[in-house]
Image (cartoon, rainbow, N blue to C red):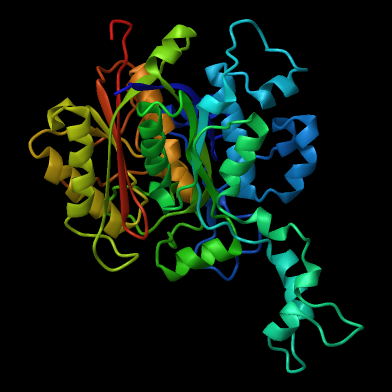
Length: 451
């Protein structure tokens, strides 16, 4: 089997638009959750969010592609930014990078890949439609009594009126299809290798990475862009989380402390946006071009929770199955794991399930548990992608970031409470559970020149 390593990282998060912004925010124990200002949230029980700082997506695409940004939903834009960052970090000059630099490599150290050997697997969530745009179309489809008439939505019997659908742009749907994240990234950077979209909520990025690793291991690609992005900061997204009782509702006056992962007093999570993209590469390909290698992907595992949808499994049994599969694939024991980065949304039932799975698998061994949600919130399909970027940097820098807003840790866990700059980290495990019960676990291994 061909070995797979990480050679590029791109992260877009509430901490900032770059990977260094994200990593420095984690190490400094920064909280970037604040008042929700993107729309009027007065009628919602939670009015806190983790928003990405302002940007212009046109700054991240070639001039020839700027027109296409008009049909990019927020989730797609985030993926474009993260992919650009990852490729620049890896010094891989794709068509998009070359066009942006006038047709030339930024310098001679950059690598121009064969597009047919580059894949793209990006996880996505439920992209929420622009309500203003949709409302105008629905208004045209109302019946005389004020209700939505589906016959008027599709056609109009009144020559003086348009149908509801005619008030949407012809390409309207292309803004909201989940596969458009990978689609736009693939077109911009001309990745012609295997491509897929995983839509399994917060577990999407790990599942996408597992699939991409297998395509590289089978020899179908040498390089792949993998990750996930999502924005839940939207009235529909906020309403969905509120109806599922996932939101922190007691900290509207102290938004920086709203999300409290793995804390016994946690009362919910915070809607957020962001995500990450990693460049993963076959080991010999990376060595041949002199790439910087952050770490090796040594194992992954997947499972599903057989139970009621949107309900955590208290025993953590299904999640532990995925953890054990990843350990077996990596050919290591639980004692070899030094750091665990769990989902840890700040939703009590799910955090307890994470803790149960960790205690179930590790038993007497207590790895450091570092959770990123406290200062960021829940980025949906972008959450595990961000955690994978954090894990790669943890292994590479041998540093451990603190868990923000964790004053009363769940029993049995060794939660990180302060920054550690000099640790001895061999393996980091990243684990995630989606609302629908998909579980994804990835293990990253320290890479040395002697390997």
